[in-house]
Amino acid sequence: PMPNGEIQPEFKERLAYMGSWLRVYGESIYNTRGGYLRPQSWGAITQRGDTLYVHVLDKGAASVTLQNFPYSKILKAYLIKDHTPVDAQLHDGAVAIPVKQMNEDQPDEVIAVVVKK
Image (cartoon, rainbow, N blue to C red; front, side, top):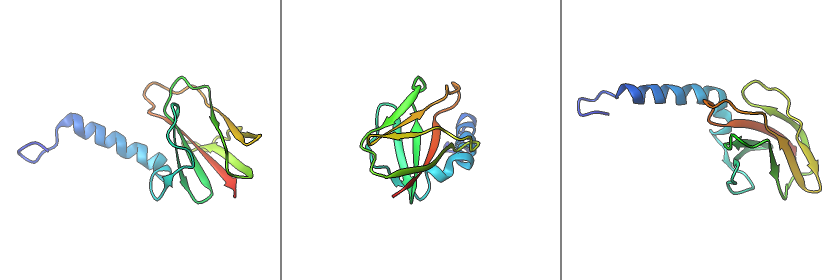
């Protein structure tokens, strides 16, 4: 805040944007822990229970590969924003996840991957 206690207009705009992002994607942040992989060049994973949240930050990524996948089966995969199914394929201990082209104003794409332990 400024010395008079008010928040600058440009900060209000950013905070409002973050609030709207969290309304859609909050499940991938709140009450999660880090995924089984450390952050990668394409992004990072968070996890809660049997759901992995793949945060793709690289706008140029056409796909993401999760190496050394520690789970036996993928039950389903979908985009968090609208629940559109995603064709995540598990083969030889790695998961290939296609990523659609992101809009420039979109900070990331979040894909939920529900697994069988």
